[in-house]
Image 1: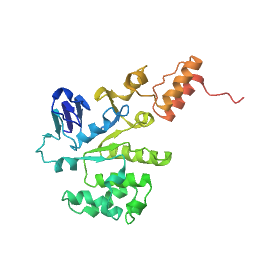
Image 2 (image 1 turned 90 degrees about the horizontal axis):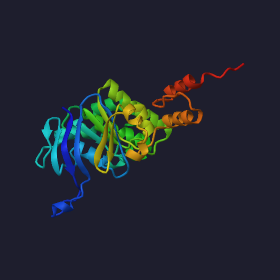
Image 3 (image 1 turned 180 degrees about the vertical axis):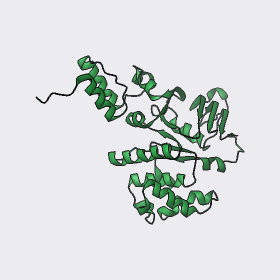
Image 4 (image 1 turned 30 degrees about the vertical axis):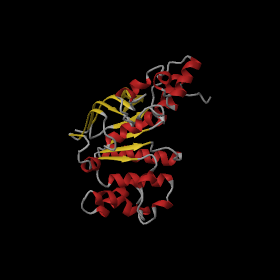
Length: 286
């Protein structure tokens, strides 16, 4: 179950002459489980990331190849409403999907639209999970960027999707709000077994939170695997148009500067600190 791409190609333009088709995505083979995944999709601007996740929600249909979502092949005549209930997509700009006069009504819109029982009860439940019960009676258009993102996520979660996709969820957020949001996503992943998929340019987010990384380049998948294997590659920037996370950049600089025995593949501040202590030891105060 989940999402399965098999030799999927996609183009925004379909000219009369087949040779003239410029494909946005080509040869996509990808399988995503419906439970427990935490995936980061990365790649240079224009590599096809947003197009790929919109196909996961059946907003876009394949030009060729086979796309199955929860066992249903996605075609022109496929009934998409049940698919979109199970795969929720939060856009990069949450104001695009928020339109009701109160936060409560906005969150309740999804389950109401899908015909689920007690939409407002569901809205209050997810608002409590996301820590925004104090915002329910406010207008969404009076909220901060971080609050709007939480409301948009709640609006999707209220329909109880198995897979939650977020396009650049941390862009423009201050460090505290960014950390708070990512911890909430981690909670949804670990405690509620939601599969979380995020598009991000922030390699620190990838390093600390992702379990699996999918790298796109020029419309194709060039890497799909665990983050430690990815970050072991010496020519990450040149090969994939990616940089190392800050923790690894620090350790790499120390290793090169002092010729120290350091494993640079660390993915949290605490692990980085412990690696530095192991390499250099604690300073003797006496």
